[in-house]
Length: 320
Image 1 (cartoon, rainbow, N blue to C red):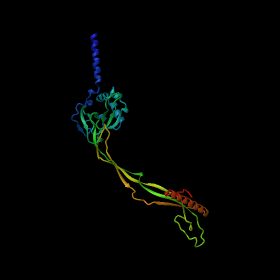
Image 2 (cartoon, rainbow, N blue to C red):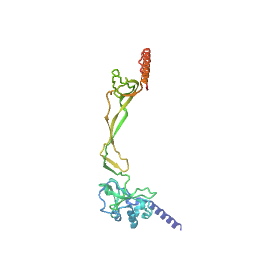
Image 3 (cartoon, rainbow, N blue to C red):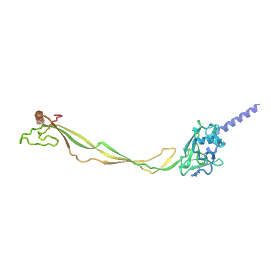
Image 4 (cartoon, rainbow, N blue to C red):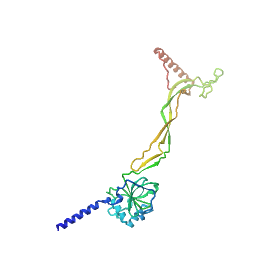
């Protein structure tokens, strides 16, 4: 009895070791033949699972796998975590995918034989149905090509890189730099006047641009204010692609170099004439005389200070 018990235990251990071998038993999941990848450009000549050919939706693929219950396909599913093969498969586990041109991996063929291939040619040839590994599995997704029903397992150590054209549409913007440019000085001046009554030759017409009255008095400057404006410079900034061909890989960012061009399109140089903006306010004759008298007093005080200090004094007034 003791000997029989030991033999039974040994049988259980061996069975457990066989179950743990997992994907290592299936040729599709072994990458020991990667030295010379065969190029494949067309699919469909040697279908592995004919019942999966030319299906148009993931639901159709799911139903076909369920209804055929193929032993070889069940084995492939068990290797990526589906313990009971197709029985554990759910519709959400199957999605449409496009395997990139340049990808290397093992692909099945008629008679369930497997070889190492590199996908080449037109990207439209390699539409596939992606089966996501079951939860807890460390395997990569299994692909079933739509055109032939062949299984494909990509080699993660071989990056799928392809050369693709780059078409960058130049974008152009104009940028104004308000703080850069030339300063233009303008002066706002305010004058007061009164309208004279025409009594003859002694009140000759004294036309002034900006005054509608025909017989205005001599305008008195009561306010002068300088304004400093910066006329901005304008630049055109454009973006252009420096390359028309780049290498794209599935496992790293796409590197794309672009040139930023900056060109000054307008600038203001040289000396700009000072421009006076004049405003004329009409007042009564009495107010005009009062203003004139006070302005003369202010000017006398300024002259007095200038004589004592030997410094030029400017009379500034804000409003009449």
